[in-house]
Image (cartoon, rainbow, N blue to C red; front, side, top):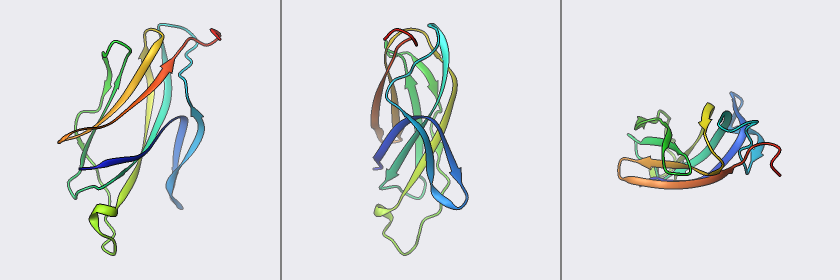
Length: 133
């Protein structure tokens, strides 16, 4: 079963061909839309280890009441294994832009990660309207 080795919310993440790990711009510990309800754009970056050759992953972003706001469905990961290392020790970094997702109310939102065998991670983040300090 795959395991999540790291997870962050950020303003934006980029991959550079010269570097295998994503460059993370401005870590986020809170979602701050200008108005509620409103839309907000951000990125997530996470590492996975313990993969198999046909690894699939599903990413779900949920609102405070458990409503699904984004669902990638189960998708196969495309990556190359290094034959010099045991399969169970290999991993990947995944960066995903989430653009203009609906943020209807203040509260705790969650990103959930799944593989076919079940949930492998749950990552909460609060959302509050900008200016409501």
